[in-house]
Length: 480
Image 1 (spheres, one colour):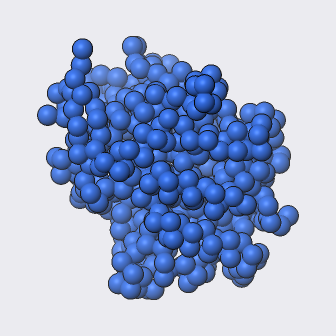
Image 2 (tube, one colour):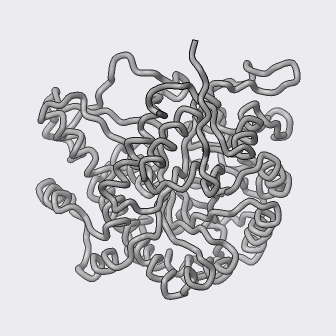
C-alpha cells in the first residue's frame, strides 16, 4: 500500500487554465468578412469535424463570459490564458482598422478577469490568421502578412497594454502549417514542404518584430509587462542509445522543436538546419536584416505546451524517391511496447516529460523564465462517470495533473526557472476536427442543455490545491 506525500507549491507559482478565442467565443457579432483560417476550414470541410460541431457556437463565451469568469474565480484560478481573435479585432486588415464592437468585448473580458482576481494572459494569434489574408496572400507564406500582424499588434497593445501584463505572439506557431503543408491532412490539403518552412520562418520573424515593437512602447518599464511566445516542443526520445536512433531523434528535434525554440530564445537558427534546408531544396526566403531582427529581439519568457512524449527511431523502410521531402526522411515513429496510454486521444501518458523539458530549458536555453502553458487529458464520453448528483468523477484527470505537476515541481526544486502550470482547459471546448469528442475541461459543457456548465470533481480538487498551495502525491523516489 502506497503512502501519500505532500509537495508544497511555491507561493508565486501560477496555477491557471487556458483556452483560445476561436474555441470558446462562437460567432455572435462576427461579420461575414471576419472569418479566420479555422472558420474557413470549418465552412469548407465541415464533415471532418466530429458531429459537425465547430467554432460557430463553441462554448458561447462571447455571451457568457461573466458567468464563466465567475466560475474561474470560484475555482481560484490565478491566471487565465486566451487569445484575441485577429480576424475579428480588425475590420480592415490592410489598414489595421479596429472593429470597435469586438474591441469593446475584449475590454470587458479583461476588466471582468481583473475584477475577479484572475490575471489575463493574452495571445495575439491562436490559429486565427484572417481567412482574407490566407486566401489573398497565402497566409504566413507572405512577408506582407508579417507586417500586417505587427500593425495589428500595435493596435492591440495601444488598447490594452496598460492593463495586461502577460503577452504572447503565437500559440503553437508550428501547428497549422504542419497539418496543412507538411502532412496535408487539413484544408486545403496542399503538400508543400518549402511553404511549411516559409510559414515557420515568418512566424519567428513576426515574433521578433512584435518584441521590437513592445520594447519601443516601453511597456515593460511602464507596467512590468512581458512579451513571449507559446511553443509546443515535443519531448523527443530515441528508441535506443545506438547512433542511428540518436541521430533520428536529433533531426526530429531540429525540425520540430529547435526551429522555434532557438530563434525565439537564442536569437538564431542552428547551422545544421540551414544545411539540411539547402540539401533538400526547402530553404525559406530571408534577408540578413531579418536575421538581425531575430537576433536582437528575443522573447522575455516562454510558454510550453506539453501533453505526451514523441518517440522515434532510424528509418527501416526505404524512402520513396518520388515523394517530396519530409523530415521523416530521417526517422520513423517508434511505438514503444508497454507504454501507458490515454486510449481516447491515442496519446502516451509519460509525466516525466515535464522534468526532462524543465531541465532542458535550464541547461540549453539559459534557464529563461518559462511556464507550462498547456497540459491536460482528453477523455471521450465522460458522462458515464457521473455520480448521482450529475457530477463527473474524473479521478483519471486528477491523477494525470498530479503526476505531471509532481515532476514539474521536482525540476523547480532543482533550479529550473519554471513559474507555473496552466491546464488545458478551463471548460470543455471545441478542438480542430475532434470538436467536443474528447473533453478536457475542469468544467463540463453540456451540449444537449444549451451548453450549460457544471464543475467536475477535478475542478473542486484544483480549487483545493490552489487554496492550500500543496499537492498530495504518491510517496516515491522522485520527490525525495
